[in-house]
Amino acid sequence: MILSGPIDFRPKLLSALSHYDAARFKADLIAGVVVGIVALPLAIAFGIASGVSPTVGLITAIIGGFLVSALGGCSVQIGGPTGAFIVIVYNIIATYGLHGLAIATVMAGLILVLLGVFHLGTVIKFIPYPIVVGFTAGIALTIFSTQINDFLGLGLTNIPSEFLPKWGLFLTHLGQTHWWTLAVGVASLLIIIFTPKISKKLPGALISIIIITAITYIIGEVNPSLHVETIGDRFGRLATDIPQPRGFDLSMATINALLPSAFTIAVLGAIESLLSATVADGITGSRTNSNTELIGQGVANIVVPFFGGIPVTGAIARTMTNITNGGRTPVAGIVHALVLLLIFLFAMPLINLVPMACLAAVLIMVAYNMSGWRTVIALFRNPKSDISVLLVTFLLTVIFDLTIAIEIGLLLAIILFLRRVMENTQVRVYGEQLDVAEGTDSSTHEVLNVDKGVSVYEIDGPFFFGVATKFDELMRNSMASKPVVRIIRMRKVPFIDATGVHNLEILIRSSLQEGIHVVLSGVNPTVRKVLESNDIDKLLGSDDYICPHISVAVEMANQIVALQRHLGSKVKKEER
Image 1: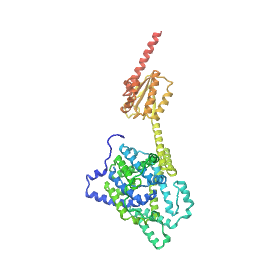
Image 2: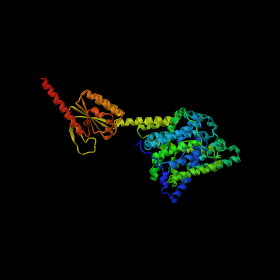
Image 3: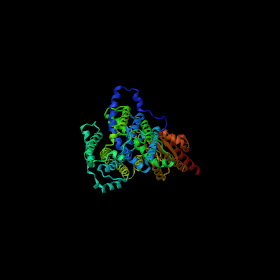
């Protein structure tokens, strides 16, 4: 990982256009049209579920999708609003309003750009899998919960945002279920489920919306008593004009209040987009530039809020649709955005007729696909630490807040990681004989004779703050036996942090005060540079006390012991 150096921003669109031809354009055109049609109901549904209008969902998919494809580092990524953001966006709007959401989204975009500029794209991929599964499953359950009111036709208002009170309200009002609305929802769900069994290329969500909207419209005209609530009923006449760019007021108080939410949006966006890109790379054989992808995602999230949009990220389902329909360059993603733009300009009146129960069915299916319940069950065969991270992240996401879930989940994962590193990092004490080849693949064994006045300690693993404490405790326990020389063997120490340097300095100082020499062995160039920058070589007394190999260190230590004995015997003779 390199935090400095030139900015790694090379959009895939530029390299794709340098050797583009008519055959590729035809494939991208077909894929882009199909993805645009598939993205239509999802953009509308995600917008409504997030607490904004269908128009906002479409605007986000158009502008955000265009920018992600034009500026991103993945050849086939399709960007837009996704289910992962529904919970956090809904909560931000409920607390800070649309103005607060715009500020949080811009801040998240800036964070994503900085992640890409500082070459942290690869680091995001290393977020523990149980955390990703935990909050994805939690988001899925939360999305499902938000659709119960529309799916059952309960007609409830002022629904609590918290999970448990929300379900308490639902259960106490089940008697208000509108059976015709429920029938519309169930029929929509069945069409979505069974359409792929006829053809996997048919967009089940769109087919369901077209069929159910037509049926409910005809039945409603014939028998008004069977009318079900539609998008038009709830949101009124939808605008068909692209909103004019608008600004918003900033204050430090607002920025401080929204920073945790912005961080959550940025982490979610980075994880989902890079996960989608990784899956796409595995299928297409291409290679995503993670840093460029994060910068592209960041720019999209900076621009979209000025047009009233919500957060944008790469969408796995739409990206997979793009791949399966032949899309191989960012041109397909740009075509998808243009298709949505044409629908937005010329077909919005028809969208007013879509039943809310049908959209609820679409989102329930999205929630089911997001839940990854098979993956959750599989993870329960893993170590208890992974299971605990999964459950804590899931429960915090569902019961409390997604921001808290990600923060606590990451903290838990870090703690468990440090614990595993500490358990795997060994501190060994050697006796009077030492096999140089021990712990290596070498078949040649060289046994060194270690003088009784020499103690040899080996640190096997990174010498960071947790291990430094472990090593310090071992040294304190061995202080009873006072050697002439202490050899610290560091051949397997890949790095050392400030705490490790500090503990090593204390050990050297206390040893010197007792007249004990300290010799370091097998220090790699990186660790040696850190030690020298902290003047550890000067503290030892000489560069010779940092030896390149254990055989050199043992030979030096034996010579020191022999010299000490010679001087000791000479003093005793003089005293006689």
